[in-house]
Length: 481
View 1 (cartoon, rainbow, N blue to C red):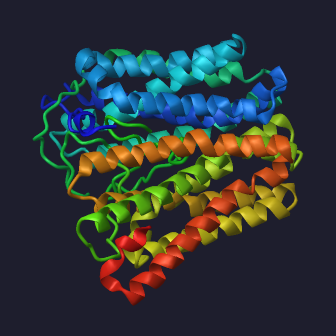
View 2: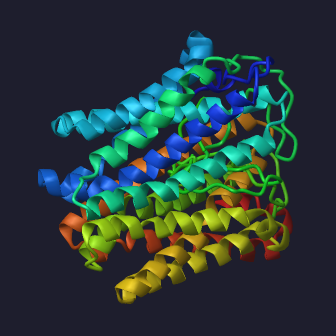
């Protein structure tokens, strides 16, 4: 993405929404996104079984979703300018329309197209909703963005439960996947047309309580899967955070589910997903700044990769390896995003009392590794507790790393946020696919080690930076490599 693209990322319009109904509608859009991000992972085992797909091919559906995020990251801001106040309804329609297309079962191509359209709509929402909330609340929507991500977080936990219940009663997954977000979308489409439209005002004021970022800058990917509920902490995402920067890829939130991990994670998300973490290292100029930023960029790929490996493959692991029934496995896979939701809810206090960012990241990675050890080695009931602990550890990684990345390149906040969004898109598109491919070559029980290996690599990088910063306190930005 070139500077011409990033420098014109859409900002919130100055006209506020006409009433609280518009704000509630915006919350609902994030609820739809969080629901569908984790739902996509919940239905992967069913899609694979129905069509006799290898896991590598089933993993292409999340990759198609990630491709949609990247496409919107590249051209979404231009499309938003053209659509004006209809941009939000269009993005929401694409989200639920993609879900309906995926559920309709139109063969492999139709399912992949549905996942792609779902990704396009989801990325559009993460790009537009934070800006619209800021516009509706006169430039400072920090609390409202946190509340929107809390809604997304709750929805991301709810979707595996609903789908699992329908599977347990032999009702299939399609209705539970597509109908709830579609019904919600129908009720909020009209209020969305009355919300503030995106604009390209590059001089809009910055949002308090986070690194100085022009109002027109991308909102880092929100992980819609699990977002902070502490209103003093800008929320991510998806799965998870399940947060996609405005004008770039997912965000998670999740984003994503997250927060989905989208992220989102946020997901992405995400900016709303940025925690005000202390910059743990000195700042050096020139190439040192870029080295520090790209080091954090690598960390972001690792963290989001872990998050979405678990979001997309937890249900299959519980079903195939721990031998839960289809409905039970899908329902219990919500333990991961529940752990992320709890972890990000306490992210603010954890950052305030956790000391140096790399020390906090190392601790979070260790918690995640410990949770995975419980998941992998324990019998079925205890394994679910391991999944919950893994979510608790992974929850802190995305927002802390994102805050450090943006702080490392604070002279170019728009460009930095866009590059961070690209990191999330790469991670969502590649890591779950790599896990699925490895599962076909070996077993799923062996392949899930992709997630803890990524955590170990992150842990080693944090330890290396901590050691380097003690030796050379003023060169830790370079140590970001």
